[in-house]
Length: 150
Image (cartoon, rainbow, N blue to C red; front, side, top):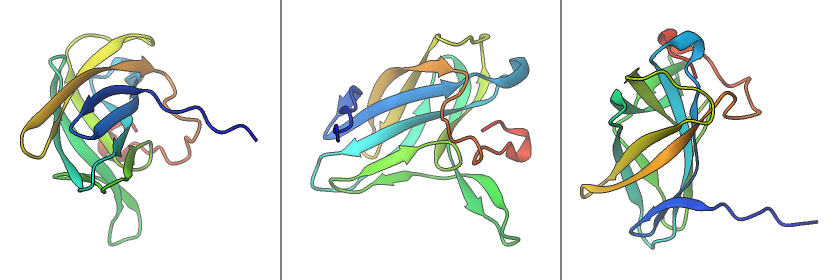
C-alpha cells in the first residue's frame, strides 16, 4: 500500500502549519460562503486559532456545527479553535469552518482569496485560499443553516 502524499503547507508560524485551504464558491452570486483548511501543530503545547480576516470580505468568523437541544445540527460562531500539541484540527464541511461574510468582489473557480489567521498572542499568518466549486466529496454533512451555505 502506498502511503498518502504528505500535505504541503501553504503557510507556517511558530510550529503551526496551514495546509489544504479552499474556499467554497458562493452559490448563486451570494456574498457569503465557507472556507476550509487543516491546521497541524508540531509544537509541544496546544495552540489556539482565535480569529480570521480578509481584505476581500467584510468579516470572517470561526464557526462550528453543534447539536442543539432538539438534536438538530446548528451552525454557531465559536471564540477559538484549539489545536492540540502534536495534533491537528481539520476545518471541513459539516464541522469547524471559516464563515466568510460580505465578499466584496464576485468569485469564480480558480480564483485566489486572501485570508489572514490570528493565533493566541496576536500571531498572524496570511495565505491564499483557492476558490473551488466542491470543497469535499463528503457533501451529506453540508447544511445551509440560517441561510448560510456550507
